[in-house]
Length: 336
Image (tube, rainbow, N blue to C red; front, top):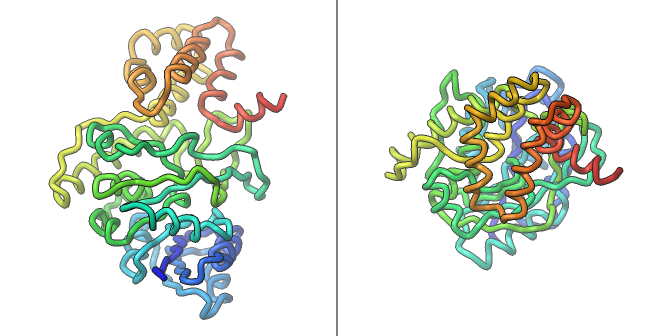
């Protein structure tokens, strides 16, 4: 039986860490190991880690950021396969079993699966991510600059040998975070990606509600565009120097463009909304019209909704932005 390591990278998540570790230990796949890398936590995380004794393997390191934690985890892992579980997320007991079944039927570098979105207190929201599976040609599309649909970090299982063609990622003061970006997208440059349509875990969203415009834990809409651009630049560097692959200078991704759209439109006066659509919306509209992962109905519907932001009624514009940006807002609307 092939071995799998669930690697949990933690920083100051003592509130959730035990649940993440327990979910990893509860896997029904016998050859599952659990590794916890603590990235210099200053809360009670290390006491929680020590309480598990020999049931887990632990690395307690100085704080270096997520990139440093991922690099360290991959140095420590000695199994053929790995799931990089965020310390505030959960895996369902059959996650590793289902992932290994998929690996067994294809030559995959990564198998991804959907995650149920849970609130900060662990309640189910009724939303799952991502909304669609990865396409068969996601690697070729990535070479053209298109970021393919993928779950957050915890919804991905990798061949370690494939990940090690991308990692270690250079550790810089500007690039401490976003290690999951390099794993999720870089892996498509070295092998095929398989998808499981079922939810095999839970993704915890902090401080997000249907009335919020943001739906993310790491960067808010105002910060995400700059961070994604920097990570794409770093991925281009890795692809060029390690894989001899030249990625385009810019990338295309609706989530990225959506963050820009929200930061420019939400709460803006009518004249500013019109000005943005007239002069600055080209990349946003291109990420919809040329999107290789969407069908015509979704494209037309998203453009139609976006245009409602030009109506001279601010509450409607703000509602539309929330509806486009935050899946919880869409779920709330459906419930009513």
